[in-house]
Length: 336
Image (cartoon, rainbow, N blue to C red; front, side, top):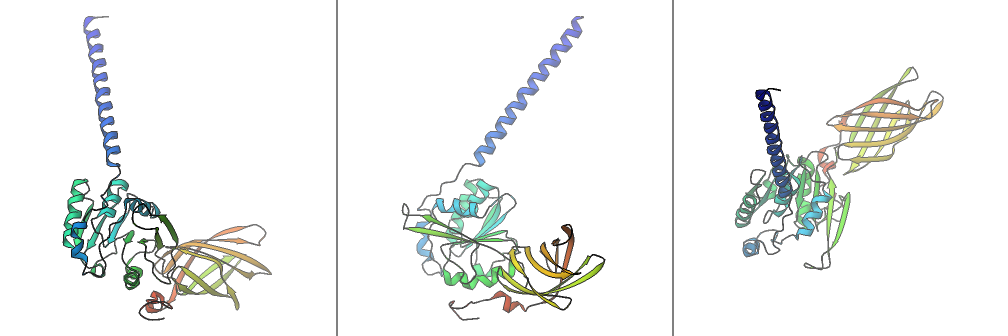
């Protein structure tokens, strides 16, 4: 073997070792950066209290949210990197900043206390999430919330009730809403979490989670082709937030839907009707997209269970004020 060949092999080997070393160092640095970015934030329980006097004359006073509640709230909402979180009454910004720092979410907060908004911006810079977040001095009722995939609130019951029509009107179906301590009247929450907070300020606290339902109230029509003939269906749905019930009509038969579930833009229900000379159970499931539902229907009671594609169209909608249910029975400010 010539000296030049040996030298060439040696040089290539050294280059390979050097490249491997550089790659290892880069991967270690990237791993460290990723771990560092996921470090938990620990806001002080007294953060922003020096500015609480500026909130005394506002509709909602400034009260810090313990970090134990912040972390539970974000887990309850299944916050992730694809989320855009809007915090209504954001205080020192801890919910938006924690969502960005620990979960990779984007978002903004609004508050009428300018000093708290400035403090939030300062914290966002310090935590390295200023590009993912923003904070504004703004009235929550004048804030556009259409971009949110999750909304958080720590307001009051009466403010929540005033806010409810705006939430239902502007937010997309499937958007999650989480309220700390205060409910929204007759709109029942989908989930509730109670936390023991005696360590911080009192006996317990509660988190409420709602998912904005698709607007289903009205008449929906579809057609199925089965056993060589078309079956026409008309379904009239009555809706009270995420709770639905309905009557369907097929071949002069009046049918009642059952096992109905509306979760965001996903709907599921069943009915039984006569097809041919036998009763056939139909289990419908689909996704609501405006005036269209696309999904499948599973038929049982036939010789072999059958799955068909299903598309329903909205022929008529209940007027919006009836659906929005601005105030329910026994709620402050009025009745239905």
